[in-house]
Length: 175
Length: 173
Image 1 (spheres, rainbow over the protein chains, first blue to last red):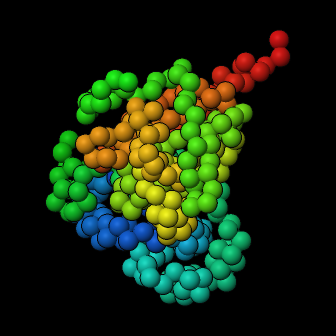
Image 2 (image 1 turned 180 degrees about the vertical axis):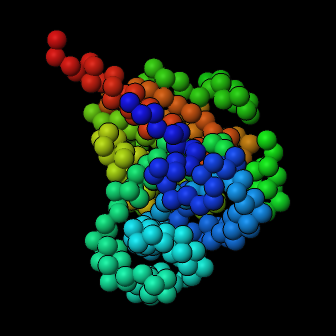
């Protein structure tokens, strides 16, 4: 049997990953597109990616808190649907940059902006085509010790420190 | 009765194998919930310090998203704090909580004391979790540092363990 990669590490076979697959520093985020703290973390993650370059492998998993964030599940569906059209990260960025506009028609507009098939994306979002995958992320997150959003794991360890650039970079590069 | 202390080592916390003290607490301004009502099903008791404090919000928000998972074990989830029923009502509405929050309000903290998880100094419940088996015995308990949201992994592991035990007992010879 194939041992699965621990839930606290990026799994390039399964996850949406960005950066170098063999990067020595591994950052995994469990997040929710409607969570303001996740949106705050987004530019910091971007800057970390820029600075660490090929040393970093970044992965994002869904952790929608749907009761308090009623748009979070459709937003996650839109990211997955964009991923099915080979542009998960483009949608991921647009969702965080436009957190206050996550209605279904907004999601379709972002698909258009990215040059994706918006009709297909809208259909997949409406039918929650990726609900199982999103729920699997959520359940894995709970088992990994995710207790809110965003939760970050650095090289497999939950990071509970401050989420500013300085502290995060320190934690990421302290080996 | 032993004298009350502010001992932070949680030595008074009821441990697995102990009969869970029964209680009846307000879940809304005009309804009460008793632990004994849940006999026959596992119960998750989540004591938390206060409605509205940010970490609590996260913890109850998280559990609220996991009701399907708890349901798979036929487990009932209840949150307990010393806040009154009206406060719970507002907090639950704000966060769209779909499980009962019980008011350990009068006499204040009596249930938390019975479970050994009352913080005398702050006058609140500690952040404590109990999984109670279908027969009403404590199967697992955990006290988290007050500022740390314990998440739900421990609860799920305890429910799985409990299910394995129950299945074994119930298995035909």
